Image 1 (cartoon, rainbow, N blue to C red):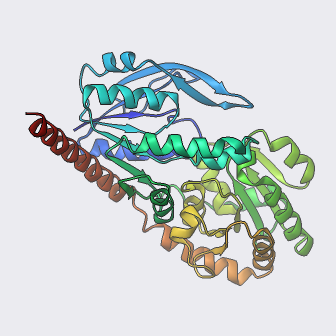
Image 2 (cartoon, helix red, strand yellow; image 1 turned 60 degrees about the vertical axis):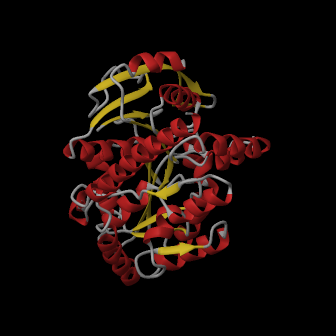
Image 3 (cartoon, one colour; image 1 turned 90 degrees about the vertical axis):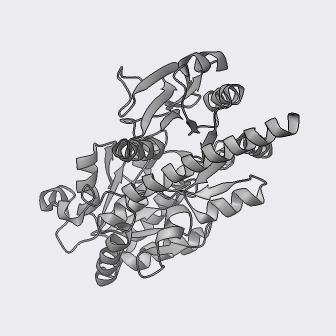
Length: 386
């Protein structure tokens, strides 16, 4: 099979979409799939990992968040790139680049599968344009109903999209590499740099520092935890437009900025509790990374946390938007070392059930289904017209 992936982002950019596509493509290559890539021109010149052919298109930075690039291309440009015709096109973006690819694929009668990687209607509220959310939902419904399948990472998300009128929604989960993220990377020297001994807790957050991540609750929760455990270290891994305000509010916290994968794995494993108050994720790779690293996760019952965590057993989850309950759960957990150690051990076992190889095989089955459904529909249309 020849697959073309259309995405706004690609490895080594640091975000969940790039990470997911990189891991799936690695496994697809093992399965004999040829992958072509269409993406915006990267800041650092280079070629996309695992791509047999690549088209880099023009882009603009998202206003107010220059790290996010939006790609632009004419459908005719994409059609020329597809002279070596793909069997299926996978749309990892619903933006202008995804729309152009959707048009070009329809004109060439190429099967389409779309991924739901970002909750755009949620972002409308986070960035002060909530009046756009209804129009955004209408656009997304139209966009996805022009594809053979829409793949989402959780059953919760699938049910929500079906209620919004999006058809042919299926679940494709996300994986974790338990060798790359493991308690084995716990580093006593790093913990000493944070000013804690082996028996003092470390609370960690990893992700973008941006409005959609619910940074106000992160700040309030870490402050409340520190009130009851003054000896607790706070570590914040990541960067973004909200960093300056958070640094000012949490002067005792350790801010690392973005770090490479080995350093990230070491930071996870050297912490004890993972605090993740975001509700904007479709999955949340950081949750599975933290679980595989042996951390007790405190999160809302949403996305990956809803799929993987049994409350009080493999993590702690709270009903979405219950900010008081979230803060109380984190404060309680940090006072009980035996509990967060036990939960962390169980969390790793649960995370290791998420195999990237199995997920890639499921993805390939969906691609084959899309091909078969497309050909069946095309044959039916020809019969009706004759």
